[in-house]
Length: 549
Ligand code: NOJ
Image 1 (cartoon, rainbow, N blue to C red):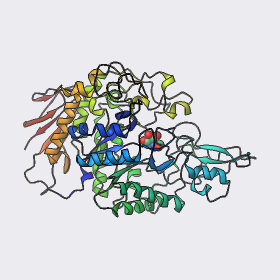
Image 2: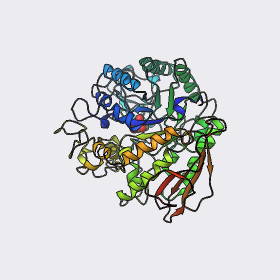
Image 3: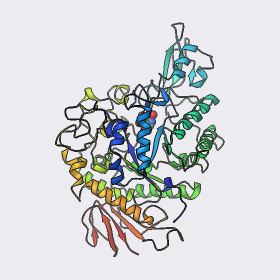
């Protein structure tokens, strides 16, 4: 055995609380719903959960606009519901991590309301990013930076005297004003918020928009991500994360945080530090655009391994989350719609999707996701092979992106549909029979429900359980070295071994993924798992784990 901290090899399961399970029968998922399904997660075989925001919020961005960081939104329950969910998870050996949203608050947060009421030049305004406008009467925004959700990133306020006044910055929706992290009081407040949840017993955090906290004050361009100070090792962002790390390290147990951040090698190396946040998502792994593009996929793997070598930070693998079209749909499309979590208007029109093909490929990709060293994340419903729902009626769309882009982009609702648990028709035991769920579920999801898949040894759910059990049993699937094998075009092939002395006698496993159209030869050995039937060759769109020693 090794002394590796739990999070460095864990499989996390992301719960989007609105869509996981509805405990009170109002059509929206909640904390009681999570409590009622903890046994399912144990059976699945994950180590930890990450719950997207459930804190008090006007729900403009479904919880990513927080108005009170230290309370539960009534939509999701109460602090007592949280405590009992946490206790239930811990009793079952599941770790609990929660979302932390430090880049912005809700415009209904009392501190923002006070900033509005206090007027220009007040210390209250210093907590957010307020600027005078340009033009004779300040009628033009201070810069031409665009919001990531479409439209301008600056909104003009009405001053306490009733006159149009200053502008405030929001990287996302206008109801999500950015904090000014240059102000010490913001750091102090977040130290308090971290402690509040650490005191309650959470095992860690996922840091929302973790690369965006510091803005370049003089920036005048169009790209909203450019204003971030990233390369300066003395950038205030490193001090912020070091300070927050100290708070986490002052608690017993191995508390952790994973950064949500974009990025190529330059960005990653500028933000990931051993004494700061523990993990970061390897988004390039989910961003390769064409299924048969083995080069991009291999580069994404190499990048994370290189980062591990140079910073000591374990890689974190992910293919799906609540911001990205589901992988079954992406892999079934000629051009993947993966990429930035907000599709840009420049993206190609959605291509025809072959869900049978996409499902076959998603099954194969799971063998790559769960065989690489480090942590991995599974997004609720991924283990059921749910596709993206791209035909929601326009009048039901809820993502703020839809309105902010003037109905140019439909947004992310399609990957946030409530989960089907059982039964023949909606709401599929997500809510009590007869309840309308917050987003409607497709009428053909009965075969995709948990109950339907539980009884089928060949289902996606059964595959995930099998893979997770193997990953537990074989340390070479979660730690150690990746050695590339000579491989034909459009394939991925690597050998997985533990580091010397780590787990003496552990199996050596070759992982093969065929992204092309021609079958390839498999090495001799014991087939531990395959995403479709294999013989001594691996067909197209299929992956296998072969124990060679
Ligand atoms: C990233 C989150 O994952 C996304 O859902 C959210 O809209 C933005 N950050 C803003 O908080």
